[in-house]
Length: 533
Image (tube, rainbow, N blue to C red; front, side, top):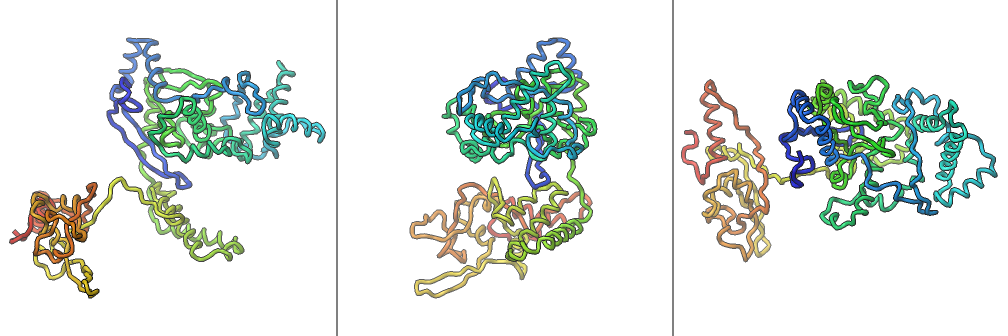
């Protein structure tokens, strides 16, 4: 499937479909469904391949899967050591996964512990001070030292009660699952406070990445995976959205995942310790986009049909329909007013422009949260600045005004150009867009109007302007302007009139209108003697 390195990240692609939508906070994300050129077309072909090749087919699929997606960080924990004391991490113990880790966390909020992590036993002030001083030399912070003391006590307690009916590890993990905030979001988190890690998040993709040593790339990927692609014990709100992939009250992503293998139900990536909670990622995508992503290889028999159907339905789903956008916007505005009424003191010290921007932003968010469109970019524009992202520049021209001028209509649009003479006197000349096309240089006779707009524009003349780009003398701005060339072709945007669709039953007037639009746009011309024919 991925025979050559230049076939792309996943191999030769037969077709793909993608959709961009927004999450609740307005964050843009995309879903793509990719069909590979050499993939099996259906479950019957899968069954025939398994019958013909047996376990070797599974091994081949496993090799391909491992080449495009992985769940393991490139840095090995066993090769690392404590930065404070030099102790090796090779003897770290993996934590068992409690069954409650998959359950809906909101049902457990009543039993949320007061501290993070919840203490196993109470320490005297002297005991705690001695233990913290000992651990702080290795950990580097008081809060982190207290957490390390608690984890160490868990390990010692479990060893003392081996064989007994106790599960301190599981109870500790269940405690983490009950807490509102994730462990890695603590104020003293060493990863998110690290200057190198924060710099990695802001680096754009660069060809210079190839000059990095292999260990530097491994460190960068591992750090990005840790910050972006981990599914922690405290689930996100979307984990328990109603889904056919999981029972009610269970994480629909089936996290934490046990270590599994291939089967006729599809491919479930094997997760070795300590990577049970890593979303499958691609190293190149992680380095280029620096964002969380998930890759699923969907190849299997009848058991995989439900998963494939779910993924296809999810990617190609229709956007939610809104009967009345005005009602949604009005409700959002009233909600914003109530919030301002509750916070009278803070609102009183805020300037009116800021209040107005926040009101507009709340309207945009309320509408786009229901429509799942890219409108949150408009809110970003209101709050911070420009939100325009274009792959190609555009240029607008009014086709209706051009037709009116050709057909000798009395009313049509033109540009009133201000010209300043040598004695500082001002004069004004009228020049239309059609004048630029009609009196273009002879070397551009082969261009139609659409091509002319895509490649050229009107600009001012200079003493060094070449004669080959001068307008013809009949042009109203012949003395001051000439033809400019776009460095890259722009996209002509036709406004003012739409080319109508016609068929055998269309009236004659509609056919004439379409013919006029087509001829003006696509046939080279300078003048039109009988435009109505």
